[in-house]
Structures are given as structure tokens and as C-alpha cells.
Image 1 (cartoon, helix red, strand yellow):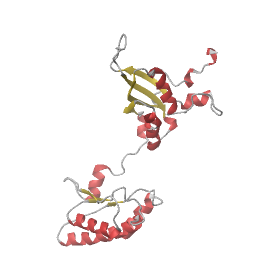
Image 2 (tube, rainbow, N blue to C red):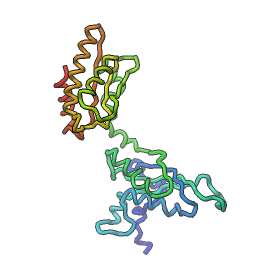
Image 3 (tube, rainbow, N blue to C red):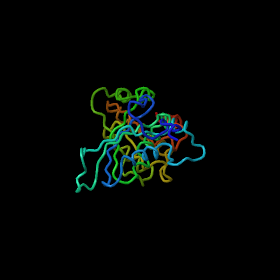
Image 4 (cartoon, one colour):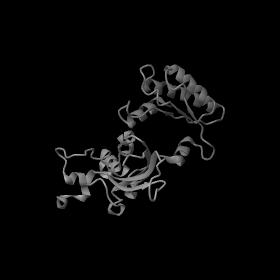
Amino acid sequence: MLGKLNVQSLPMAMMEDVDTENYMIATYLATYPAEIPVAKLAPVLAIEQSTGTWIPVPGETPEMRQKHIAKVVALYEVPDHEYMVPSDVKFRTYIIQIAFPIVNFGSQISMMMSTVIGNISLAGGEIKLLDLHLPKNYVAGFKGPKFGVEGIRKLLNIPKRPILNNMIKPNTGYPVEVGAELFYQAALGGVDIIKDDELIANASFNSIEDRVKRYMQVEKEVYEKKQASGQFILLTSLMISHRYLKTPKEQLTLAVTESW
């Protein structure tokens, strides 16, 4: 029976047996009641956040588990009770490291976060994600910010001084014209960037399309007034994401066509 065991399909491994270029290592701080056998629980957590099965199910093969199952690669108790656990200890704390196959989530950041701290956060006890070790090749696949600090400074024509950002408040509940007046006052006062709160989203009483059109009109008014007094101002209204407009290009087109 033991001869048929595929050890590479198990939810545990030695750290040196894991290809760290194809696995992400997550480090957790976990506290459980003293009677919980964490050495047995840790592999369960690894399974829960990867293949999600504890008994054989149709469609699951050793080859699939070998490729996709997460693996506990380290388990340390802190402090380490070298000989025995004192009788008055009610809770025990551990450092747990789990290796997750990169192939399970790829370049999707939301999937990665769901993998490392999704259902695992509901597993009882107290568990906290401390650290993620990401392979260099994996990190290199992300382009990073499109403009960066220097790019934003160049767009705003602000080479050195601090950049002043304003977020329109209240978060939500106001019509377009109220937002436009708040936008106007902030812009006239010298703010460089004006941003909606994410909670306004694409509300029925204040749609993105109406808001962008009106804010760009106000932006033009303020620009012309400030320019007349010898000052330059460039304002950016940062709207909520592509969930409400089909593509980022559509958002940009709307803003540009309504601006000067």
C-alpha cells in the first residue's frame, strides 16, 4: 500500500523539495487552543486553500493533486516548549509556512489573495498572514504603475512641490450639481487632483457619465479663471473603475471629449 503512495501529491513537503520559482510561500502566525493538533490541522489548511478535498472525488487524480495542491513546508511553535507544554497553557501559537502553486492563480492578484487568506481565515482560532515570498519571475510579469511618481508629476507639471489631492465628501448621497460645486471650490482653492470616493460608484442619482461631463465643464471654467490670473492648474477627476464603463479606453474617451 505504501508503495503506491505519491508523496508529491501530499499537502506537505520539505522546503528544499519545493521549486520556489513555481511556488509562492505564505507565512502565517496562528493561535489555537492548546488541545488542537496543529501538526494535523496545517495540512488541512493547505488543502482547503488549493484542491479543497480531503477524500478522493471524481475527477481528482494524483497527477492533478501533484500539480495543484498546496504544501505545508514549515511549522514552528512560538515559544518553543522544548520538553513539555506547561499545564496552565490554554493557547499555543505557531508560525506556519505554506507553499502555493503559482499555476493556481497566475497573474490575478485578487485570486492570489483569495488563495492565501480566503477560507483559511474562517478556520477557527486566530490566523494572520505575515509575509508572502514571491518568485522573481512571477513579480517580473507585473508592469507596475503606468506612470509612477515622476509620470504623475510630469502630467501635472509639478516637478518638486507636494501634490495636493482632494476626495469629494460626503462619500455618496449627493446629486451631480452638488458634486460639481464641491469640485469647483476645491479646484479654485488650488487642489491638483480631485477624486470621487469609491462609494459613489455609478449611482442612479449620480451616474459616472453625467458626473464626468459636468466635472469636465467645471474643470474648464476653473482653468480659464486661474489662467487669467497667471496661474496654471491641471485637474484630474479619477472615476470608479471599468466595472461601470466597458473599458478603460471608454472612460478616457468620455473624459477627454468632455474636457477642453
